[in-house]
Image 1 (cartoon, rainbow, N blue to C red):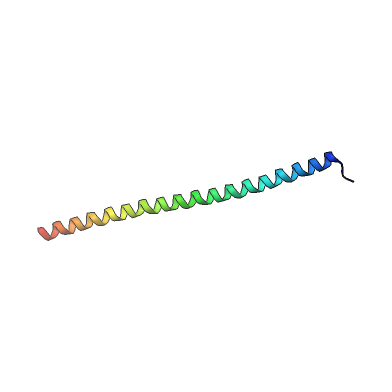
Image 2: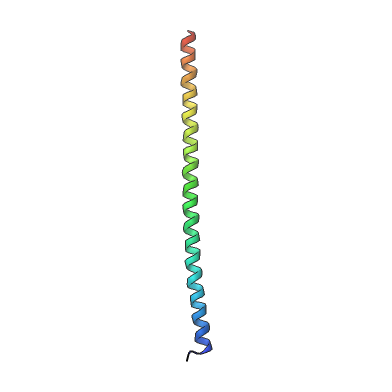
Length: 67
């Protein structure tokens, strides 16, 4: 028969292991989310650069037509 102290130890051990696993899962989710957000922000900035360049080219083309 298992004594009270050993049962308490087993419960504490299970609780610590379970908590560590859950925290690890949550950390992984957050890490993935941060990476995804960084990628999206980077793509947004790239789109902005491309739009700026396209606007410059359109302006230059318009000036060339006027000359």
